[in-house]
Length: 214
Length: 245
Image (cartoon, rainbow over all chains, first blue to last red; front, side, top):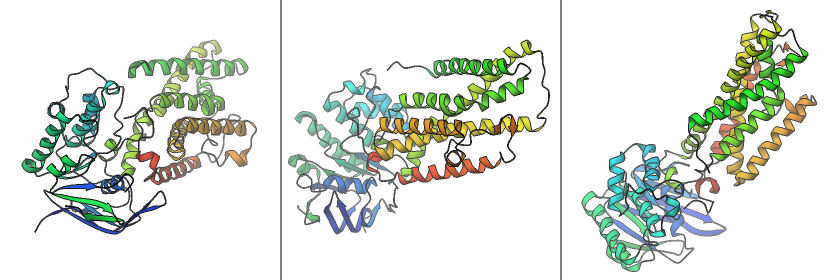
């Protein structure tokens, strides 16, 4: 029997006076790469934030990696990219990642440097985060998401501001993480091609729930 | 912003505290030439102007300048829950309130020794055994006062979603409390977190000064509940400033 990484039952969410989800169910098995598509404002980001524990549902239960999220709790072993990471502009990319690495203490300096090189950033660079280009900022966001070997990656528009050449590199990297390291991935993206290449299942947000798209 | 090391910050705060203690004790010795070191130190610790105005404002300036790590999901999701995140934000900043009080006590003792030879009077023992007890309680009281000011500002910032308005609110409360204390509006000051900063009234220990420890614990509990209430507060969970990316 497949191990479930995400299991949502009876979820309802009202956001800014709109009912986004009503009595919704959703299951994702270990090793799957799931894409979520939908129109702007449909609730894709809210859905991912509820899985992260950053937004509470009005009703229903959210189980992530076998643990039910209680009010105010965050799941363990997840890596996340959302719309605005909030890195410190006055620090280098490496320092920003080290500050985060020191919270869980799962990764050391060498590990952080290795991850930075993997996403195409120079860990020795003295350039402050505030001076990074949009693409570099997104690379750093990807680095923070994958650096602690998460079992589940939750990615909201991970390819934003990434140029087309690098896009395929990152798609391959996520594919590698999924196939070689058994990382489950749930993501939203406007890049239909990448969703097509990467995802084993695609859902669409409509009718106050998720419907299978492919 | 120019970055200063911890050593520089400690030296700067100590220099300011030394100046504040000197002014406070000079005026006290001027009108009380027979005062001994304990009276001088206690007066300094008991000075409403310093306790209610200068040190809290000093603390706000120090922690406000440091407030550059607000509302980051990358930090949040690495915590067990929102409460742990709130505590992780507040705890490191409590180092300053404690440091400011300790530096102020050290500065007061140093300045007192400077004034003592002129008075040629040693400890008279008028307040005997209770004196040290009262001084220790006063130090604890002042540390908790500073902590309360800091948490109030922090919680207000998250609830109002504006750091500047939160600082203004905190300063307004501090000034109101100062005025209320100076005018002896006991009915008001008794119910503010800053109201019972003084254990002594006219040099005499009030009989129930130890009760304030319980009072402070109650305030700490209320503030902890407020911090707990911040969970799912949007401004607490999201980046709200264009300065952060």
